Length: 245
Ligand SMILES: [Zn+2]
Image (cartoon, rainbow, N blue to C red; front, side, top):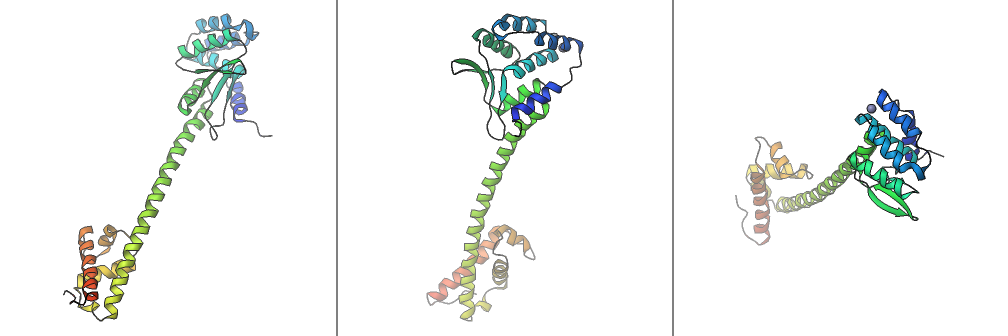
């Protein structure tokens, strides 16, 4: 079976090298913590002996390796430290808060659980304890989700606009067809005919892009005006009047 995301984080952490001497002392202290029920006072003691940010990282890493689990960021955002002993949970909670991590408190099957539920906070925590790659996974998933959401919104928006444009282009082609059949099309002004033919050749383009295609280029409102004149001529023809020239 594939190792879980949590297991991957833990094996990466277990292999991480501790470089500074003070931090190695912290690691030794953590290894000597002993049974959870007596660990509360010892944890506070280890924390007070921390000399640098690296030492605190090593201590929080030990908390995570022993009591922690983290969800796969592709599925959910949850990092838990699950204890048996209330005093030890409280001591850990205090240390985490001192290090700038505000874990929520929960009870699961009567046991105290400290929990982080935001991708950003979990990413920060994993980076702090040295699981940099996995921290990125959390940050990236969030960024990717937001990005995909934006792309989907953009695609929906584009699809709606294209549908609108095609309907407008069809209306133009229909009107032009009627005037051609009646022999009235060629008496339209040349710039109106040019606009109509550009529209017929490029039904998917916006008026703005259509205008840019023209030679010389025509503004969006210029294009709209020219196509309006075609529709007007078609309406006049249908009502029995004269096509404007
Ligand atoms: Zn250190």
